[in-house]
Amino acid sequence: MTGTHIYDEPYILYEFDRILYKSLKNPYFYSRQKARHVMMKEILVVIACFTTIFPIGAQEYISSPYYETHHTDSVKRSKPVDIRHVYIGIGGGIDYIGTMGFMAEFRVLKNLTLAGSAGIGSWGFRLTSDIRYYNKFPNGLYYSAGFNRSTGRREIKMKLETASGVEDSVSLELKPVNNINVGVGYMWRLWKRGRLNFIIGYAFDISTGDCYALKPSQPELSEDGKETITNSKPGGFFFGIGLSIGL
Image 1: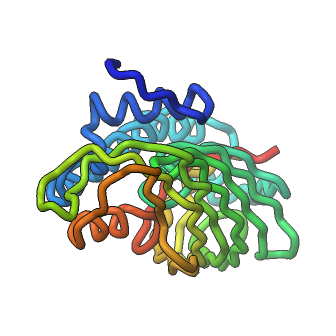
Image 2: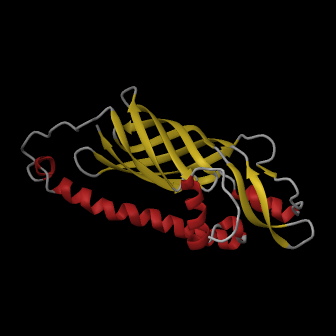
Image 3: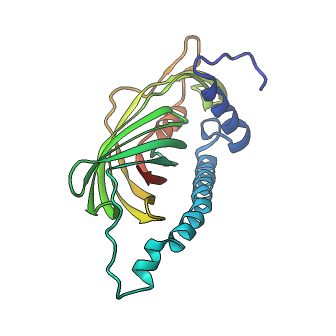
């Protein structure tokens, strides 16, 4: 990557921006129309990853004694569901955990759990805590509400429209963003202790002040440039997909 710009963040963040900029065409550097195209690419990548994993777990489940007992012999007494009190896994999505991250879930009552996740996205690291209520834990329909915080970026260069009416490379800081999120999800059983998770919902922005700050000696942004940043920050509709296993 050409240029003399030095990133203050860890090397992994530098690599993340480089890959997005070169391969996925980071929406920060392009128009909002192309940003939507990039989001669809990210969605397809996440879905492809988990649809690759799903058949493996499903095959293991179908070939297991648990499946045979429950589905091939109606006379036999069904075994109880293997319920675990702790689940860990990986996940990703759009405005959920981040592009990719780790998550954990802890059962506190019969159908009530606490969940937490940590991931990385274009707005820095993303930390989330949720409370979930299941119709019947550990699988099936559940309802979720919680809080998430995107840490922001100390310095990043974006191609934005300036007050002069031309697009220019602008150096700025992305400030932390806080959201209250509500959603509904569904857990599919994969094998004896595995689960596939899908969730959709909405994140309400509760941050105050501007979500960015221009670095010294940078040109002022036009209204369209400001709107581009505002529309790019975390919040709004989200969806996520994840794979977890009980301990």
